[in-house]
Length: 114
Length: 115
Image (cartoon, rainbow over all chains, first blue to last red; front, side, top):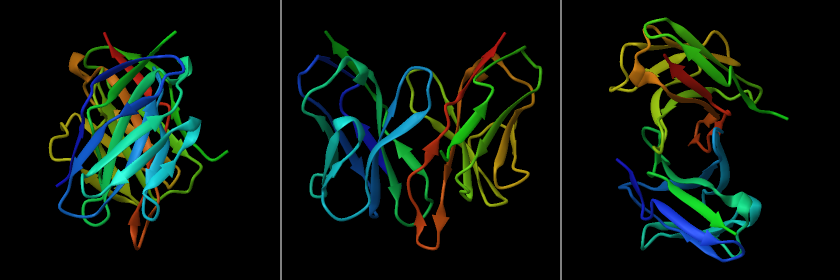
């Protein structure tokens, strides 16, 4: 079975400051990793994904994440945030073999202050 | 653009009155999922269809049913909604191949209110 822990439930940041949203996972098998963003009253939008290859992945809206296998982490970063980045962010894993179900973290609410 | 569409976006129903939420997709994906998401929580998988094969999660109440009449459409039926069923319902799709499946694509969700 897989589990995902997002270490911060809320992250307040000033506009144009850098941000890091932390995600750690646990799995006995290899996994794919994802970050989704959810704006109020919207569905989830895929920000970026790690399937294989380079451990640094770039996504939409200037976000990037780094897969660290030894630390079982997949932290999300952005060098300079905007008010429009205010949203809920979910880290998720998908086992490459087996049940093929997305396992989500609890979510991190990112609030950008002017 | 290929997408996942959910109708309606907002649905109000009365306690105990059956309600159906719909989802359609133009991605031609073979897997369709239904999630329930309550406030400030992660989405919770209710069930999914892999082609015509229905897969129910063990803890999904019997009150929730689903139909997939064809590749493009999937419905969520709540037979007797209770106040605790008020939530956002998310439909998602993915493409499963012989090597597995990858990212899921989500619709905009239907916000269900039970009065």
